[in-house]
Length: 327
Image 1 (tube, helix red, strand yellow):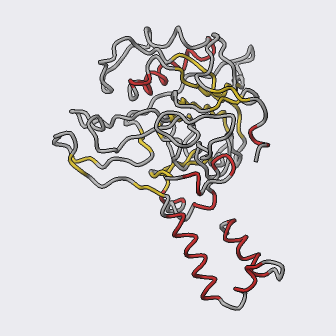
Image 2: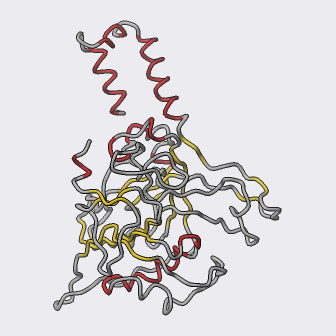
Image 3: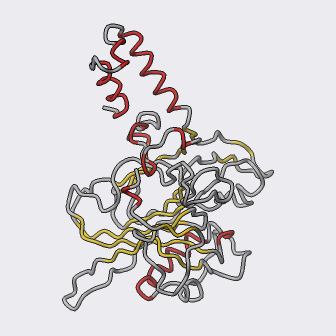
């Protein structure tokens, strides 16, 4: 049951709750629940209808919250110990300089050699991820030269367990905390930002490719371990729970059937207001998870994140303390 609707029903049954007046008025109670559900649904923006953009001959529906890159990419081999067993690795939100190339005219469909891309800006343990980082940065050339944040999580995961944070959520917690500041075009805490589909020049190029601005890239070597929805939560400060929890909005975004389960090697771009969740692993195995958060970040949590091995400082406020305890 939806947790918030569950609270309403518990309140109806409690004589000490003002909601108890609806105990004998089922019609009014159903109306209240429907109003709550409708209010949540008003905060969901779905894929835009096809429109002709930029005098292009392409009629392309502009996604609302995700874009899965058309080419899957293989993951690099994990690090191995002297016995030939994979070594776990956990690097979270490490700052690095996204100095992909000095050539800002590189088009997304062009191949760019990883011999000159990123090898000098990634620490030794992460150089093997340079091809994946390059694939992402070709989609957001405005991010080149800025500070981004890389996460690589490699570990053995049992069947039925999740490697990453479980539960339906978005990355932006919504409200402006005292220790953070507004960033870019947002009125809320940014955790990568991300936008497209504004129907202005630049959303589609002459090849019909969708151009993204900012955002988050995620990928995994294991299929069916991450589900994403092609929608985003607008005015999310009004509806999100702690740390972006939107478990109460699953029905409003279309339920599980409306989501997309990523395949192994899929690179998915999303905004920090895109609903997503980690899925229980369908079979045990060594999972490799990759994430790149672009430069629009309002707060970098010192206790949870990994400092740069190359001395790159976060391009935002550094916050001390455990964010999971600050409900």
